[in-house]
Length: 156
Image 1 (cartoon, rainbow, N blue to C red):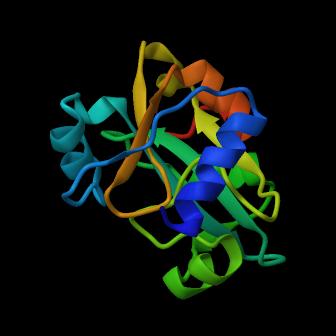
Image 2 (image 1 turned 180 degrees about the vertical axis):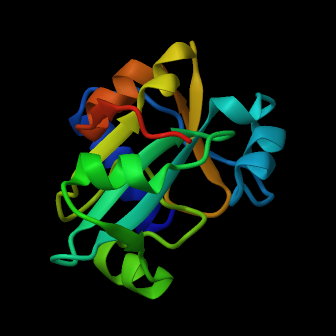
């Protein structure tokens, strides 16, 4: 098991979140690919998006339903500063996760985390577990709590 996957597994255990990480054998990089592999709707996929603060370079994690698009204005308001897309290499260096495997939990450095309220509407959601083909399912409110996320209106 990769180091990134182990970090997700350990973070879940530390938060009291009982998960089973599954290696799907095929890519789950996009919400559509993940939904197909997990046998769920695209809405039940948790997108973990990293953006960078323009003022101070802080990385912010935003959790959204797979079919939703992040409203940058709403996200900037939640973050307290203008945001820009984070460089994928910088995301990898600063979080330990590569784009396509960015998880909602398992960070060495604490990031400010925000979750769109729509996620809580589902009985079960699926999230990336640290690799392009690794996922886990969770009750969404438990996942939001484990991630230390502030719930906000973030979707377009």
